[in-house]
Length: 440
Ligand SMILES: Cc1cc2nc3c(=O)[nH]c(=O)nc-3n(C[C@H](O)[C@H](O)[C@H](O)COP(=O)(O)OP(=O)(O)OC[C@H]3O[C@@H](n4cnc5c(N)ncnc54)[C@H](O)[C@@H]3O)c2cc1C
Image (cartoon, rainbow, N blue to C red; front, side):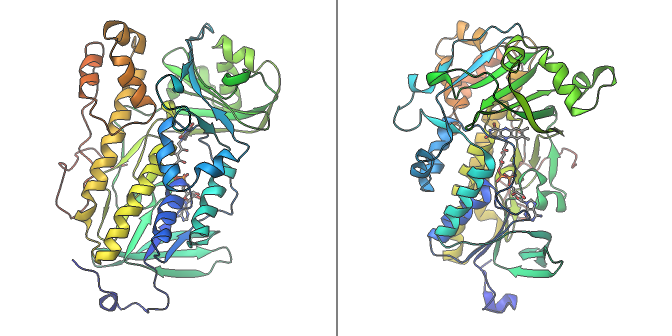
């Protein structure tokens, strides 16, 4: 259906071309692209920036959305810790060979990425959107989607002073992160059938880190029962360090306080214990559970889900920011075309959704393999040396490729899940079967 401003009865003066809910990486990137195309974009953000957020490690193929956003020179000039590699550590503290991205990718572009302090990174991204003309209202919390019949026509929000304000636009982008505002309100949010871990984390200052080119490497340090620590060195001598595992493992013997859980698990990996043996923990201990989720639909007429609001994957391979930025840029271009054509029907976003789901499903299969008992990438590579390049590409975020050959090789060792039948626009021409999983 073509969208006609007069038909909706909106006043022209307060009309926007797009309303974006949430100023995280997904919201900032979609807003930057739309503003760059000359559209009137309003971003509504609940918090006052800079604000804290977990999720600091970028992967190599984040390079392309960052390039499209004009962020590469800004990151190159920043204080963020440069990241060239990833290393895995056994529970006994034995390190694998570090994987250096430049052994496969171009040194001057994809092969060097960053460990970012999110308060600073997210601020840079939203400033980038502002520079391109996006209007941003902070401390403005969206409470409701505005609807006319089946169509979403904007959002109702509350300002810090308690005032209720309505913002109207022919398209609303839900970029609310793992809270997934639109998905929850529409009853579309679904748990992943298997990936439901718990994470506990904090920050250290002055702890041990590697030197030279390895200083910024991400370390994934294994603990029993397929649990793992992340160790992400940031600038200013800070380290983000957290543990992820099944809830029943982490809370064994009735231990429930995040700090006690964290301190007990430090003892389970010799490398982590050694690296945290100096320096001091800083700030609170955070805990989050049941964090992998998917939206049954990518949106409906006038509404599109972007970033974690569309799907959120277990962070073991640090794919969240890459997927959020990529979906923001892709959605920005799609919505630009929708605005030009005056067509905001759900079905036109089927291609966006199918593309994003393809990447999410590829990453999800590797996450499943990682958590399978007795699985190791080394066993697959020993049997199939050509799998090394495919695994590297997927882990580095080159997720749009056809990895069916790789899945066949991995399935010789462990079962992998089928693609979830989710993501098709609601009310549009289905591109996938509708899912049968229970909504959260
Ligand atoms: C424990 C953990 C570790 C992680 N580690 C990594 C990592 O190392 N690397 C990586 O790439 N990713 C990691 N992630 C994932 C990463 O944090 C997310 O994928 C990323 O932040 C998604 O960006 P987003 O813009 O979709 O959402 P967010 O960054 O969450 O932004 C959403 C924004 O929406 C705002 N908002 C929410 N509701 C409303 C509302 N009603 N009204 C107005 N504003 C609203 C919020 O305040 C927020 O600013 C991790 C996640 C977790 C939980």
